[in-house]
Image (cartoon, rainbow, N blue to C red):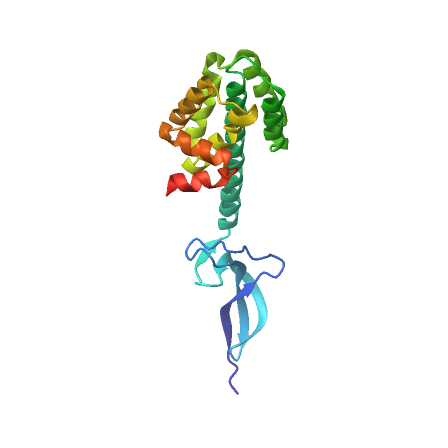
Amino acid sequence: MFILFGTRGLKHAVNDSPAIPNACPNCSNGNLVHKLYRRWFTLFFIPVIPLDVIDRFYECDKCSSAYNESVKEVLERSQEEIDNAEKEAKATYAKALIASMTHMSTIDNHLDEAEEREINDAIAQFPELSADLVGIYEHVKLNGNKDNQVFNLLNEARNSLSQEALVNLLAQAAVILLADGNIEKEEEALMKEYLIACGLPKDLYPTLIGKLKAKDIKEIGAEQLN
């Protein structure tokens, strides 16, 4: 009687390691399943005794692409970088918004209650940044555009935010124009300077004001991009 024995390699899913959803670099929507490649002792071609682990890797359940285990660390780092970029963009938006709102409200050397209320409402939208935003508010209220702080923040926004986000930023800042019921000439001129600083055409101003008066500022960004 012949006894046939040998070894063969088999892939196994690592049960205690959850799949990484929608993370395959090749097909974009495949789940990466953690697997190991183990050598088995076979008897009559049947795996009988598990031997050593030859390799560990991630395999896509859609396209079967395989990746070194280090892909998990790379993907996690990428997500962390995305999250940090989103936080930085949000902070840039908020700082430019509060600086421009405060600057515009004090351009006539008078900050009334309605304008101050609008600024406080805007600060309340970013509770995690409130300390920084209150600091910007107090500084600009006291010093105006000293050292070009307001326009530096708008330029920073221009360099890191989308055009739609910039339009929405200025649309939100422009509520100051109507807060006291009147649009002064210096306020109108300043808003046009803001538009230019953000790389937007100053002739967008009438559309901006029209939408504000219609209380329909959310559509401005989309219209500017179309």
